[in-house]
Length: 274
Image 1: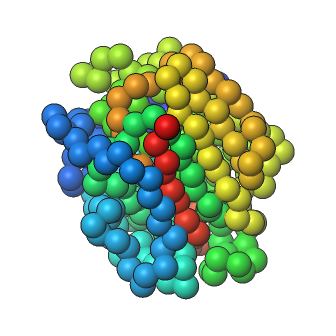
Image 2 (image 1 turned 180 degrees about the vertical axis):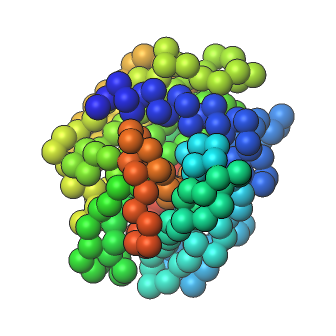
């Protein structure tokens, strides 16, 4: 299971680089002089719309592309805010893919306009399920990936909390340090661990990592779950939240066509190291 996950992530990263991930090309490279605010912040999504002073709502290609078989998109209209929650919708349908007929996934991504460095990153979220309201009943399905993470420049820095539709009772925690962002990251650039059994889809949980020089500590609901010391990145990165579709026997799983899924986020925050 873990080996398949690693292999599929690497393949998908290659596809991202080939086709471009979002229209703003934020994943292609970091700005030469990114704005790196020094202060702490929190967003509890109390307004009725995304705070566009802080966030970009992505539009464009998403991961998981398989020629003639599956294509994914991020769509702005799949992002909404209401009742104090951010909602990210994922839908999947059959349709034309390149020269074939396959699955089209339509998901969502938001990311900060600024990059951030060492510090504490936190998300309170309920990952991908069929629940049509933040506190409603629902169940997870195949064909989805939801995550709170940071990322820049071909995984020069990447640190993740991830849920995969193939592993419904598993939480993945991973970090990447790609020393040469001009190429795709390799398996040697990653360190990951997982918690199992774990329920990330029926309730809200608080996911937090503390990123320090040479160490990343991962917490869920204030309980330490893992400490990673290999492949700890150093470059400031964008704070991100995404929900995207897959049609694969491995990472994310086969598509669940015709079943909308929802990813809810209650609040997020960043606190720089003292």
